[in-house]
Image (cartoon, rainbow, N blue to C red):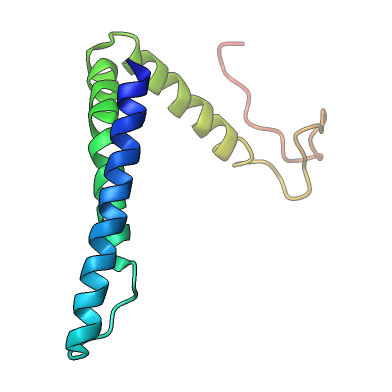
Length: 115
């Protein structure tokens, strides 16, 4: 089965190169209008070809993520972890680092009335 796919890809690539060569000769004959690079249409076809291949794969992956019941928990955990990493330094006095075990005098947070 794999050799069918390989043969299809090689044949498609060969046909696209042939098509680009023919259209380049036609453009050379006209020599009018806007100048484009020689392989601009080939690149367009290659992008379309790869999107045709990768589109269903990406769609299937997105669909499986949408249906998976664990994904919301993972997203919440990732967002909380990101918040902790980004905002963990907020409220610390200037010059304090993550490894500082004691705060400077006068900058202790207010104590809870319950403790």
